[in-house]
Image 1 (cartoon, protein in one colour):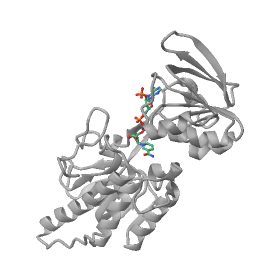
Image 2 (spheres, helix red, strand yellow; image 1 turned 60 degrees about the vertical axis):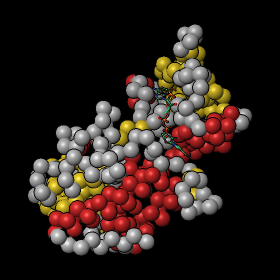
Image 3 (cartoon, protein in one colour; image 1 turned 180 degrees about the horizontal axis):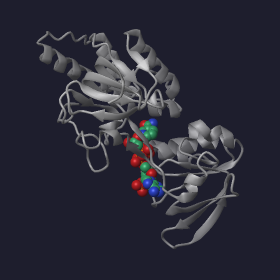
Image 4 (cartoon, rainbow, N blue to C red; image 1 turned 90 degrees about the vertical axis):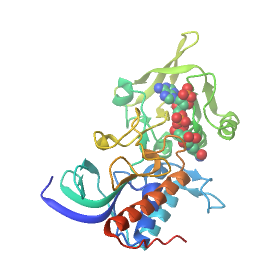
Length: 322
Ligand code: NDP
């Protein structure tokens, strides 16, 4: 595929909770895993604030700090962690071939896919135009720039609720645009939003256009989908929090996936339709999508890789489950 080639036993693609957990288990089983982190080392949790529901942190922890802990633990057992982005795969041969940054080919006996998911966008032209100039899909990354200002956030799930309350601490007013007459977010998150005085909820509201002065965002035009009434809200920041897409584009044509791109694995397993290729975390899980469930499937992927290699080589399994 490319001129520079390297062979590895176990290749892990992605560095969220699934990838790092797979790395910890694979390294302890002496598979000498090599991990390519992708463009966001640590994954989605590096773009969040408090994580209160990951077991083992009785007082909660900040997302980026937790991912640092994951990384250190994976490194402690010898995982070779590299910054790089997988651009192409070829699963037609054994070992499997994976191209990194369009310049290096890795051949791997087993591949663990832990590529996660990415934020969805509304798809408006104005959203693209002002992306980075007032439009953002990450309140935690960019909220700081809107200190004391009025902002809007679109979405009604747990992410939107969490980000709205985060923004409310920094900004003067947060306008929350909810397209139905109710939230999708859990009751606890809804409660937090409804009890934050500087969050104004606009139900049945859809975004028509993000307004700007050619340089920066100046407002948002919304329409009420019940009475068709339009109104303009002056804001300097516009945050999109409407869910995620699995990062599985490069596996199209090789791996079975559902209509939305989530990788399909065998029941009770992380095994894909290609032997020796395992999928875990948010790239494979459209239902639960929690850090702890991603870590769980990462563990399974590593154990299944180890068993696969052991069966191939007729060697006894060296699992360290403790
Ligand atoms: P969700 O898919 O749960 O919610 C997406 C939200 O965006 C929905 O309210 C949806 O509206 C709305 N939406 C989608 N498309 C549009 C659009 N074009 N215009 C306007 N609104 C739109 O995604 P989340 O990212 O919020 O959550 C993903 C998963 O992660 C969930 O399982 C959630 O529970 C979990 N999570 C848990 C957290 C925690 O426990 N601390 C924190 C964050 C997420 P509608 O409701 O009408 O479909």
